[in-house]
Length: 393
Ligand code: GLA
Image 1 (cartoon, helix red, strand yellow):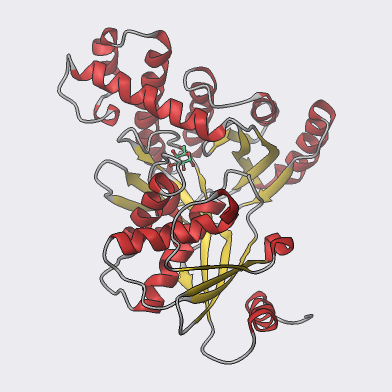
Image 2 (cartoon, helix red, strand yellow; image 1 turned 60 degrees about the vertical axis):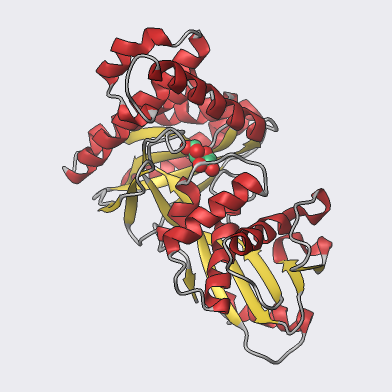
């Protein structure tokens, strides 16, 4: 396959699997990294993610019947998985195909009827389980495939993000917020998205770091409690909100400033819920300040806010873990590292750091060695290129 582009290679594989002929189309949807604003998206707060150039590719051809055939280059052993548009229900046996099926289900639910089946080949280059939103990218990819294939012009890219979230919440059982799908659908090269998750108003902020780079470090751990712990955090925050609503007129935790929170916090009757709500309020305000700092080219302040975000996620929201804290401590202790924090849902996955250009090599080398010594396995490092949102390729 030498000399061929990735798209050409995937199309060749598609034809080997499903045969030649017909119109074959290609799509891409990126993963994301969140710079700051963690666990705020279901609390009515702000987030600041950007799309990666890593993501999920889809090669597609129409069928005349109602069959769906799926194949993932990442799960070759599973072979071609065959199902149909008349079987859009979640099942354990369906494995990864629950994600595209969930999006199809969510389209049909909105009366966007899918009139024929599809042959689909998927390939993703986001490391699995890394917390860089491989599942959201697969959902957004499917949304774009359906919009394009069936000519649903009225479905916007924001709708595709919302449909992806709906499928994740109500088909796949994770009560996630809108951040990941929004970043994958709406990303913009060299920009991060300052999104108000309460209103879905958003603004693109150029990420100009002059002499620094964004570096993602993958801890290569994913603790198994992820989904249930995520849903627990969400429930705790919602209960804290209800308690606050008995003393102050707010719709979400994102409506409060820090001083308002301090004024009303006694309404929260449980110390754990108090910490959760404090994180949600303070993290939202930190995110607003961080975007301001970036606009003012104050990268030092941006980095300090990232560090404060990590402390709050570790101590108050309690979504970090030993391996991630090791990575963050090592990074924060290194000169010319402006900030470092956990990114994404938590309990493993990745950290995101801002590192001066001339320190990147040292960062990878020294943190790589120290992490392996302490934890017993290697971390992985990616210097980030911020890419565009989902597109036809
Ligand atoms: C996961 C969820 C997002 C968001 C983050 C935490 O990635 O899918 O909606 O809540 O965790 O910020």
